[in-house]
Image (cartoon, rainbow, N blue to C red):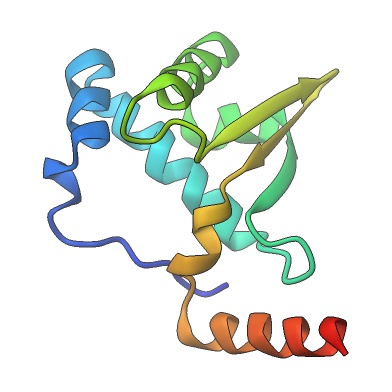
Amino acid sequence: MKWFKHLSGSIKDPLVYDLIANFKGDGYLVFFGLLDLMSKDFDINNPGTNTFSIKYVTKNLQVSRRFLTKVLDFIGKHPKEKGKIFYTIEGTNITVKCKRLKNLCDTWTQKQLRLNFDATST
Protein backbone atom coordinates (compact mmCIF):
# COMPACT_ATOMS: atom_id res chain seq x y z
CA MET A 1 0.00 0.00 0.00
CA LYS A 2 1.39 3.37 -0.97
CA TRP A 3 -0.66 5.43 1.49
CA PHE A 4 -3.60 5.20 3.86
CA LYS A 5 -6.28 7.79 4.57
CA HIS A 6 -5.44 9.97 7.51
CA LEU A 7 -8.56 12.06 7.85
CA SER A 8 -8.21 15.74 8.67
CA GLY A 9 -9.69 16.39 12.07
CA SER A 10 -8.15 13.20 13.50
CA ILE A 11 -6.60 15.34 16.21
CA LYS A 12 -10.13 15.89 17.59
CA ASP A 13 -11.04 12.18 17.52
CA PRO A 14 -11.75 11.03 21.11
CA LEU A 15 -9.18 8.21 20.91
CA VAL A 16 -6.43 10.42 19.49
CA TYR A 17 -7.25 13.16 22.00
CA ASP A 18 -7.04 10.66 24.89
CA LEU A 19 -3.79 9.18 23.54
CA ILE A 20 -2.19 12.63 23.57
CA ALA A 21 -3.68 13.49 26.96
CA ASN A 22 -2.35 10.27 28.50
CA PHE A 23 0.89 9.66 26.59
CA LYS A 24 1.72 13.05 25.02
CA GLY A 25 2.88 13.01 21.41
CA ASP A 26 4.27 9.49 21.81
CA GLY A 27 0.72 8.12 22.07
CA TYR A 28 -0.11 9.73 18.73
CA LEU A 29 3.15 8.40 17.30
CA VAL A 30 2.46 4.80 18.37
CA PHE A 31 -1.05 4.83 16.92
CA PHE A 32 -0.31 6.39 13.54
CA GLY A 33 3.25 5.05 13.34
CA LEU A 34 2.01 1.50 13.77
CA LEU A 35 -0.63 2.04 11.06
CA ASP A 36 2.17 3.37 8.85
CA LEU A 37 4.33 0.27 9.44
CA MET A 38 1.33 -1.97 8.81
CA SER A 39 0.53 -0.12 5.58
CA LYS A 40 4.07 -0.49 4.30
CA ASP A 41 3.85 -4.28 4.70
CA PHE A 42 0.16 -4.61 3.82
CA ASP A 43 -0.83 -8.12 2.70
CA ILE A 44 -3.71 -8.28 0.20
CA ASN A 45 -4.37 -11.91 1.25
CA ASN A 46 -4.52 -11.04 4.95
CA PRO A 47 -5.52 -7.37 5.08
CA GLY A 48 -5.03 -5.53 8.33
CA THR A 49 -2.88 -8.20 9.99
CA ASN A 50 0.87 -7.87 10.35
CA THR A 51 3.54 -9.67 12.30
CA PHE A 52 6.74 -7.82 13.11
CA SER A 53 9.66 -8.35 15.39
CA ILE A 54 9.14 -6.23 18.49
CA LYS A 55 12.62 -4.82 17.96
CA TYR A 56 11.61 -3.58 14.47
CA VAL A 57 8.56 -1.77 15.84
CA THR A 58 10.22 -0.28 18.90
CA LYS A 59 13.26 0.84 16.90
CA ASN A 60 11.14 2.53 14.22
CA LEU A 61 8.81 4.20 16.72
CA GLN A 62 11.68 4.93 19.12
CA VAL A 63 9.73 3.69 22.15
CA SER A 64 10.28 0.88 24.62
CA ARG A 65 8.47 -2.45 24.48
CA ARG A 66 6.78 -1.59 27.76
CA PHE A 67 5.54 1.75 26.42
CA LEU A 68 4.36 0.16 23.15
CA THR A 69 2.25 -2.44 24.96
CA LYS A 70 0.94 0.15 27.42
CA VAL A 71 -0.36 2.31 24.56
CA LEU A 72 -1.79 -0.70 22.69
CA ASP A 73 -3.55 -1.87 25.85
CA PHE A 74 -5.02 1.63 26.24
CA ILE A 75 -6.24 1.61 22.61
CA GLY A 76 -7.74 -1.87 23.03
CA LYS A 77 -9.75 -0.77 26.07
CA HIS A 78 -10.78 2.65 24.77
CA PRO A 79 -14.56 2.93 24.31
CA LYS A 80 -14.11 4.56 20.88
CA GLU A 81 -11.82 1.84 19.51
CA LYS A 82 -12.71 -1.20 21.59
CA GLY A 83 -12.36 -4.28 19.44
CA LYS A 84 -10.77 -2.51 16.47
CA ILE A 85 -7.08 -3.04 17.19
CA PHE A 86 -5.72 -6.22 18.74
CA TYR A 87 -2.22 -7.40 19.38
CA THR A 88 -0.56 -10.56 20.57
CA ILE A 89 3.04 -11.17 21.50
CA GLU A 90 4.72 -14.49 20.91
CA GLY A 91 8.38 -14.58 21.83
CA THR A 92 10.12 -11.73 20.04
CA ASN A 93 7.25 -11.03 17.61
CA ILE A 94 4.14 -8.90 17.80
CA THR A 95 1.08 -9.50 15.63
CA VAL A 96 -1.21 -6.52 15.20
CA LYS A 97 -4.71 -6.73 13.74
CA CYS A 98 -6.62 -3.71 12.52
CA LYS A 99 -9.45 -4.76 10.22
CA ARG A 100 -10.35 -1.13 9.64
CA LEU A 101 -7.04 -0.55 7.83
CA LYS A 102 -8.34 -2.19 4.65
CA ASN A 103 -11.00 0.55 4.44
CA LEU A 104 -8.31 3.24 4.61
CA CYS A 105 -6.25 1.91 1.67
CA ASP A 106 -5.18 3.85 -1.37
CA THR A 107 -7.24 3.38 -4.55
CA TRP A 108 -4.89 0.86 -6.17
CA THR A 109 -4.87 -1.35 -3.07
CA GLN A 110 -8.68 -1.13 -2.80
CA LYS A 111 -8.89 -2.42 -6.37
CA GLN A 112 -6.49 -5.28 -5.59
CA LEU A 113 -8.58 -6.22 -2.54
CA ARG A 114 -11.72 -6.37 -4.69
CA LEU A 115 -9.95 -8.47 -7.34
CA ASN A 116 -8.60 -10.80 -4.67
CA PHE A 117 -12.06 -11.09 -3.10
CA ASP A 118 -13.64 -11.86 -6.49
CA ALA A 119 -10.98 -14.51 -7.20
CA THR A 120 -11.46 -16.26 -3.85
CA SER A 121 -15.25 -16.18 -3.93
CA THR A 122 -15.61 -18.03 -7.25
